[in-house]
Image (cartoon, rainbow, N blue to C red; front, top):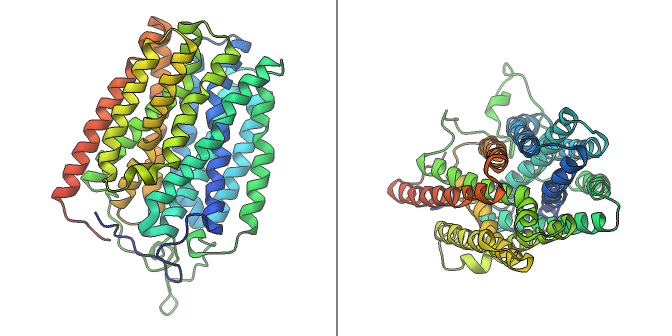
Amino acid sequence: MTDPRQPATGTRASPRLFDRFSVGMYSAFLLWNWLLYAYGPAVQLLGADLGFSAAAIGLHGVALAVGTALAGVCLPVAVRALGRRGALLCGATTVALGAVGLTALSDLPGTMGATVVLALGGNLAIAAAQAGLVVHHTVNSAASVSTANGLGTLVGLFGPLLIGASVAVGWGWRPVVLVTVPVAIAVAVLWVRMPALPALTPRPTWTSPRGRGAATPASLTPETGAKAPDRTRNPLPAAGWWFLLAALMGVAIENATTFWALTLLVERTGAGAGLAAAAGAAFVAGMATSRLTSRVVTAGRSPATVVVGAFVVTVAGWLVLWLSTAPAVAMVGLALAGMGCGLLYPLSASLLLSTARGSTDAAQGVIMLAIGVAVGVVPFALGVLAGLFGVHTAFLLVPGLAAAGLAATRLGTRQMRGSPARAT
């Protein structure tokens, strides 16, 4: 399917994957993924410190979901009001505040509130950056989005490792989370110094609708300030909604695994908390590997075909993990599952955005809203099931999510082939 979006005026049709703008957008993924992949082990250690139940720990997944959904609501508004640079800076500031709150507060409402704040900031930053990459790279957007997620995951790999090392030497998990603050400051400085480009969307200057030939705010696109097409109430065709479901299943599997893998390893293999937290890095390493090599994997294949295969690989890795009773075998299963899971969200999101009608930021907002539901429901549901039946039995939820995602991808592909591309 051909992407209906056209390159913005004055930009190249196919910019380099590591030009200055792209590197700036990739830094948003480095900031958020550093904290996101450390968050699962950190919040379980926090729960152990404060005596939270499994269900209470799972509630922090709901808080992550609320912050993610709020980011989806705020993104189009923030980009229209402040430009993409302003939205990015708001995101960095907010995620830093949330990280400080998570380490400083010691009751359930406080830690959940801090989680909402950091999830709002982190997801606002990556949503703005991802939409910016799609606008900037146009026909090469899938590669740029995959590269962004791959680099973010690669940095995220160090979060669980450092959590494990910090716990092992007696410092606890808090110093690792607080590293987010200087990282946020560094990326904010980078964004401030970036030159203005159409995809960075400088804050628009609105003119009175009564003036001669004046444009109203509703008639300008948030990407370029150019005349916008008429918006439809439904921002996605049928194929887009199926790809959205596939992306949600990928995110749900990713969050369920990163959130609860530590507990599963401790329960099944007898590993200590520090070793289990470090072992969880195998999943993140697998994700980083597949995302950074996605151009090789997708060469000569349609993205939808790769997504179907990725769901199969994810379930294969899950099976090895679920059956293992030794930490080394569990790590192999986590790495294999990560290699499959790593491709699910970036490729499904790229397929979705290729079907989007109207504003890319609005379509990205839909993704974040829906992901908020998946992030909230799945870790909490798994936490409740873990409290009732044990985390090992609760992890049977994962292959069910993979089956739903695989079916959605196949249905989306059929819809896309059966309907002509619709440019707006």
